[in-house]
Length: 425
Image (tube, rainbow, N blue to C red; front, side, top):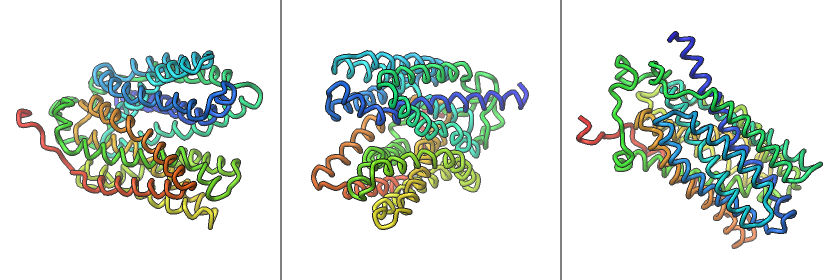
């Protein structure tokens, strides 16, 4: 296969990942828009309606583990195909429900399985094709689908709700995600070894060997007996707790504590997505340059994982200053977008640089199960709980700042290598 042909396959992998991330974050961003119309139309409380999303995230986390096993063996095409089916059904069947328990079951199971097929498959597929000083750049392009979805689909649903109801909006979203993920499945590729080519980027010491040769194949049990994966999980988990606290509470903070009107607060929130469209690819390039100037890839990825939560810390500080200087709130949005551009892909990149590409799917699938099964729910709950105690979101933002600080410390302590099991020789 010529170099041009192999590069084309790599670009198709990135395109498929972009579409998968677009649909995944489309689910997340549109729920906040649909929440109000759904609960008002059905006569449910906000807490009751939100429970459907919480249960969906639980199923998502469990499914993510199994998706990792799928892509290690068969590549991402089956995962994207299943995602197309279940994501479309999640929106469409939910639009037809009339009872509360039917909503919980349908949305949690169908949407949870569908979205669970998208995150690990997209991150790992890019990592299997791009390593060294190419991974973050290409992942940044793929991850750009997330802020695009946050802006385009959120605003699109808002415009639809002005003339129709939430049921028709969901049916429209069902068509969008189905078409996007079918295209993703069609252009997705198996692992580069299947085509007899090597991944792009700085190659490991076994570069002269055949593709995949010389790379130790880790079992999940072996990997989870070592520190690096637990360090990566803790760095990611503490950041996720802070991130989801901010995502779910920031608009209320601006309205309740800063006294901004809802429209201005919402526009600030959308600004994070707009900034993300630019920070995703830009920070990917920066991360790869850091890796290129480091002694090894794990060292470079570790540096990036320190920078990400540090951005979150500064963003939280500026967030608290929004009431005194509105420009501080704008800068905080940009910094949150920078954090967002680095952390999720960066921690997967670190794990891949430690445990290799061949074993990454199943290892990162279980890591995702742990992180996403705890982080989003805990961050959202703590943010609301602290508000209930004090009547202010100030303490919630402080908690997020502390969680980002914990992530920074854990990332700083990550090792540059791992000792393989004794019998690996």
